[in-house]
Amino acid sequence: MAFSIALDNGAKIPIVGVGTWRADQGKAIEAIKLAIRAGYRHIDGAHVYQNEDDVGVGIRAAIDEGVVKREDLFIVSKLWCTFHLPSLVRGACERTLRDLKLDFLDLYLMHFPMGAKPGDELFPFDENQQLISDGSNFLDTWEAMEELVDAGLVKAIGISNFNKDQIDAILNKPGLKYKPANNQIECHPFLTQEKLINYCHSKGISVTAYSPLGSPDRPWGSSDHPTLLEEPRIKVIADKHNKTPAQVLLRFHIQRNVIVISKSATPHRIKENIQLFDFELSENDMKTMMSFGEKREFKMGWASTHKDFPLDAEY
Image 1 (tube, rainbow, N blue to C red):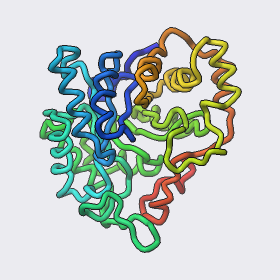
Image 2: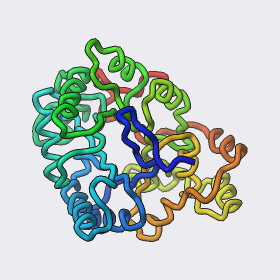
Image 3: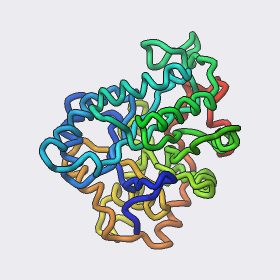
């Protein structure tokens, strides 16, 4: 079982990464230091998480303490929607690099296909609580991201939350210089994404799963909403392998050749969530986990009227 997946630029992305979404300010520094000490080499962040400065402090501390070298790490960030106008892309990337205290990113993703009105607000909404478009075309944004590769600011570029038709639009763009190296999408047994993953893999695009545990700490969740961590069929599989439900849910992706982002601020969970290579789920385990009904957590209702809203397509 591979510990990393090769991207089309020859780089290798570790198959398990540590996520920084909702890593509270102050906690992010220690969480990153602990994760690197525990063996994580892939760190997933984004401008919109509003903690890249702290993440950078954690990374820098681990490097300064001699725990790791920069070249051992694979660091990912994401271009936020309010910077989709081509003239804003480089400045957004440079700000992320300043915050992270880095010279380059290993992978820079377009966080969503939807461009939003530039300004200080991360979520510029109209009176109907819908994202206000900037009128941009994500193909033009992609061209500006390609320039970041040529400038040496990023080693590879990719996408997040894109559907098949939107990926096709990039792949078929006249004058395409770099195809997306990765598509990061919500994925877990309640949303297996089989068609989209198969499509991406057929095009040589790696896939990363976010919210692999079904996002149990999501702020909009309700207490009566069933969670994957409490799903009896997952617990049975976990008990059989003498593993936690979280470890089983993370291993599920690895066996599909899908990169997975795990997130925890709890020290023992951070360590547990990378201990995934000493067991293997059986074919029946995998079949069970592929058979649950579909429940998407991130419905993106705040952008459902945007011209580039990705969730109206079949996949």
